[in-house]
Image 1 (cartoon, rainbow, N blue to C red):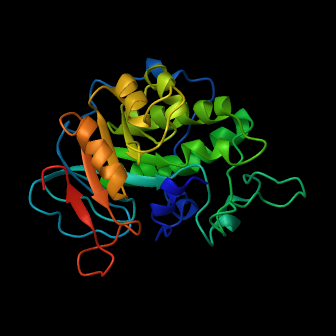
Image 2 (cartoon, rainbow, N blue to C red; image 1 turned 135 degrees about the horizontal axis):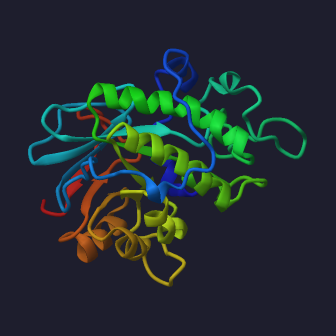
Length: 282
């Protein structure tokens, strides 16, 4: 797992299967996401005040127009709200809810993320398993919609880079199912990190990007990953930086285009000794 992902929230207060038990949506394999009707989805404003609150929700600072929060939280009133979902791996202590749907390692046991003990890769290797997994995640998407969120942020799109047995094509095929359901619920859907798949975003129906450390992460095209996201999404990119160097690079290169915020690695709330939040304008 790359360092950029060591910042995301580790606790989903309601497990995906627990929500799915109340409302399971049906997904059909074979859907081409580019055919989805996305005319009714609202994209986040560009170059806007942004706060990344996936660790803990709190009153947004003055000037914030876009907030990303965990799906267990309520959206912030009057703002554009993005709903965070761990869509490609299990949450800690919830692996038992995914019986038959966890990727197996070489020893036959569930494939555990080496950097995050207790998280296991979901097995998206077959159409049937992708559909079954999407059915559960769709229930969380339904919850995001019913709460009043505007978009979803499915994390761990890049899980295929960390687990043997998963491929980029399988990740994209599974993502099309999430795109379809999000658009059916009038929710926009973000690509989380995974710059190498940004060129495919439009054909998959993905609407915008939420990135971490794209100012300092070096992309496949010989420059900062921010450049790859800009090529794919234009100004519809929200970037979170955690280091001074990365924050400066993102602000210097994209502050007039992207929504850039610097956060602490724990994405903590005000009052915590670890709390950090800066924008390019302060």
